[in-house]
Structures are given as C-alpha cells and as structure tokens.
Length: 461
Image (cartoon, rainbow, N blue to C red):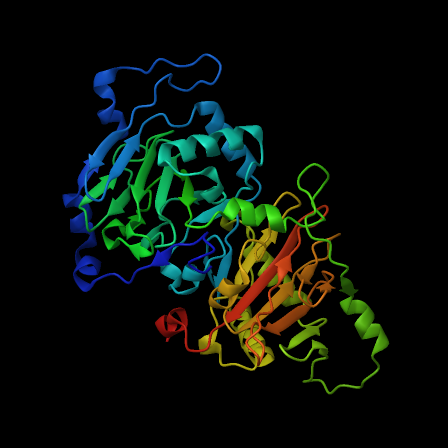
C-alpha cells in the first residue's frame, strides 16, 4: 500500500554486518521484560468489571527514540475475544512461484523476498465489536492521538520458525503499538528486536510496546527499524496497532459498500453499477478460437479494462485456493503450477514477469472491508502499480469487483481474470473497490505489475 494509505511496513535490506552477525547482535541486545519491569509493584489491582488494572503503568525504556512498555494493557477476556475473532481468518496472503508468504496485502511486502515474512495475519474491522471499540479508544488515549487516525487492528501469528525480517513501519505512521497476546516459554525467542538500538522485547501476555516511527512529519526514524524474531517451539500471537498520518477511519466510513449486512455500515454514495457477468459474456460470443488463444472482452479502452472468463483451469484454481489454507491443512499441489500461472498472467498483462510482484492470494468474509476500499486515488497507482490482474477463485453471492468511476462491476466467476491499467493516457486513475460477499468467503488472487523490475523478482534471479 502507499505511504498515505497505511496497512503496510517498509522492508529494509539487511546491512552486510547485520546479516553476518545477527545471532551475535541478538545475544548482545538488552532484553526488556515487562514482567520484570512490573515485578516491584506486585500484582496489579484489577477492576472487577473489566478485568484490567485500575491503573495502567507505562515504563519508558528508551528515551530517544522514545519507547514505552505498558504491562497488562489488555485483559485476558479481551485477548480471548481477539483470538476468537481471528480464529477462522488467518491467511497467508502472498504466494510467488510456489513459495508462500503472509502479509496484510501491502506495497512493501511486494518489495521483499519470500524469506522476509512468513507469519500469518488477519485484519479486523474498525469498531467490529464493542470490545474492539473499547480497545481502540484505549490505544488512542495511550498514543495521545485521535482514534480517527488508528488503522484497523492487524492480528499476527508466528508459528515456530516464522519471522518478519528487518522493516520500518513507515513514515506515514507516526506511532506504532504492538501488543503481545500470549506468553512464550523462557528462551524460546519471538522477541521484537531493534538492531540499531540494541534492545529486544520479550513477549508477555497483554503487554503493549509503543514507539514513534518518525523524526518529523513525513521523515522516518530509521533507528526504529525492527524485526520479529522467530519463536522456537510454540506459536506467538500479537496485534499491530498503527496510527496513520491520515484519518483513515473517516475514509473507511465513506467507502463502506452497500453490500454490508444491515447494521454494519451505511451506504454513503449510491452508484448505479452495470454488472458484468463473465459467464454471460461467453454465452453471447461465438468466436472460434485456436487452442492457444484466450477469450478476452474489452470493457473500457482508456484506461484499458478487460475481462477474461475461464482464464484459470480447475487445477490452477485448486492450487491457488490451497495457498489460502493454513500450512497444516494445505493439500499437496504441483509446486511448478504457480510458476506457470505467473507466466500466463505476465502474457495477459503484456509485461515481463520480472516487473510483477509475487502473486498474492487472499480471502474476504462478509464482515471484512476488502482491499481497495481505503485508498485515495492519488495514492492508488503507487500501491497497485501500472497494471493489475485480479483473479476470482470461487463464486459467491455479492463480492463484486467494482470500478466506481466507470459505473461497472464484475460478478465473481471461478477462474475469471480482470485486468486493467491503473492510469489513462491523460493521467486519470482507474481505481477498483472489492466488495465483501453477502455470505460465504470470497477467494481471490492479485497480480501487480510495476514499471520496472521488482526487487522481489531480482532477488529470485
């Protein structure tokens, strides 16, 4: 995603000495443990109603840049609620040439190699429940910022050996709060490590760590580059709480689609969409094709917008669908299948594969706000590149791919590809909005092409 829109982190190439001596750097780093910080105070006095300490204490553990630790920021009941909300929604949302990666559908994941992030994630909705709303306001009070600038809470899950390498949360995010949702055994790893500061934070259940990402508005503080070290034997759970420079809560409220179930949002802008049914397009076309040809339908000339029904074979659909399944339950697929899919996508986009970001697979449920809903037009091309290929992996009720400026939307149809240029010859931006399904789960894959070779592809070469 672009710097203005949020929901992403900026990956940082490791310096040569750090890459060679990471293990030694981690050993030498000062270990900060919330349990030890609060040990002298004894057990906190809890509010009988909320289960939270009556007084939340904040410990400043690093002065410049300022980093604070807040033990017991979440109650056990709140943690359980967060984990229950995300239980069925963990998604490895990136896949490339047979290598699976997880992120929050972001620009900066696109600029990294597959080894840099291997965790699972789940994006919650703003004010999704009363409990979530209470947590959001507590976070805003802690950060000293208006809740309107708080991005949607991003749940993360790190299994043994899974990690998130060196990255910066972005100069568009003044502050980050990371909350640990469970304890790990002693010496099991999983710390949040700040290599430039020589500190690492031990995961402690309910503990929040807060830091500033910037030196001044729009100027990132590289000292807060950090990484999530892999746990050794157990699974680590946490939640990223990012404060953006823009009031994303307002932007999100303005773009909630009409398909949201009653009571979960209001329709702000009424667009009379023309709905395109890919299967109906096939029925109405009798053109004879050679075996190597595909049937594509042009919906708009400038910028170009095309629909390609039946672009994916059943085998390809099943392979990509498997990528959205947790590793422990994932069926076996031909690993070469992903490379073949990406080659065909490259041909469809008319651009070399080296300019394509790793293919991302994701899923959307009725209570989620899909990708594309929360981004301003001026930021769109930076996030989605020059050409986008969007693939439907199943058929659901609702879940259309909409283009508000054209008044067009494409109905989900298994195996269908929708491909468009993000900028017209006159410089106008063609933005999409993914709509949530009215029921069930919508599965999709997304290919993004840049104007030049991507670092992820160069890393594979």
